[in-house]
Image (cartoon, rainbow, N blue to C red):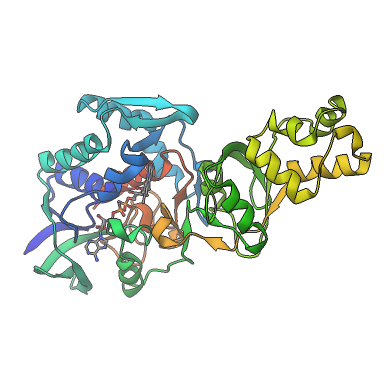
Length: 386
Ligand SMILES: Cc1cc2nc3c(=O)[nH]c(=O)nc-3n(C[C@H](O)[C@H](O)[C@H](O)COP(=O)(O)OP(=O)(O)OC[C@H]3O[C@@H](n4cnc5c(N)ncnc54)[C@H](O)[C@@H]3O)c2cc1C
């Protein structure tokens, strides 16, 4: 088979790229080993697809070159996506933090992506594994389980290594390396963090408790934290996992914005655990008091002990043993090195005709719709050029 553009991966980035290529009259083929397209989109946002964010900017992404995302985001913002969704009859709702969800669920987002690519004339080959890629003359030959495909332009839209149950294979990084591109260090991102031995018992005891916290140490951010049987999760922790590295300690402020010392001093005759339980989940207040060896009324605490208790509540040290790994990470941190990729077209500077888009690149968004938005913006940038 011979096409103008072969796109490897029928995820959010590949399907967006396909729609744009085919709309320019390019004979476009999308190849994916899954029996269904866009499986991550279907699972995204807990089945509601947090499809973008009303406020997307370069600061929402982790990338070795923080300027890399600017051009694609400037040419495709949240307003552009919302306009196309509305025109296609996909209803959306804006929630806390500007998160945009699909009102009728993630299925409507998948229908939108597949429908747009098909309407433009792109063909899709599902259930077909990509095995290898070779440069041939001025183009490429893709070896697939359904036979070879020759193409003038090749788009790698194979995603990262996270969540293999939804089709991730790591093949994109291997192919990129084989074609001469650099790949930065890969690690699970937007992943729960596992407790170290000193905190495991506390986490088990508190499993299911959730509360708003501020996190400092390798990052400064705020959001909800959820204790689990193995450690901590929740939006604040998933975001913090983008910045955490082995051996580093996170500091958790369980009472952000509250003057704990003053609260203890004001309620002298009351039990410390009851004072804390008015501001914290009761189980957490009790567990922290037990762990810090604090009992009895606040008035019974010496000033130094009160200070130490307040300091611990504001900066509770949590030293993770690791992340929950690829199986539970929503994204891959690191990827194809953007130093050798055009930020305007996503074309590899040393390999004319080769494009890399989406999560496969060393671009990772924080939680809140930013990763899908990057898949769309980068897919479109390549689709306008390939
Ligand atoms: C559970 C979960 C929930 C998420 N929720 C959100 C959210 O609400 N909002 C948000 O912004 N982001 C979310 N994300 C992240 C977001 O889904 C991804 O960043 C985005 O989908 C990446 O798109 P992509 O096209 O680059 O890659 P992918 O969607 O991973 O697409 C890559 C495609 O390549 C195919 N492929 C892989 N290997 C092979 C092979 N060997 N042969 C052929 N085909 C292959 C795969 O089957 C897949 O279809 C979530 C991720 C997960 C895992």
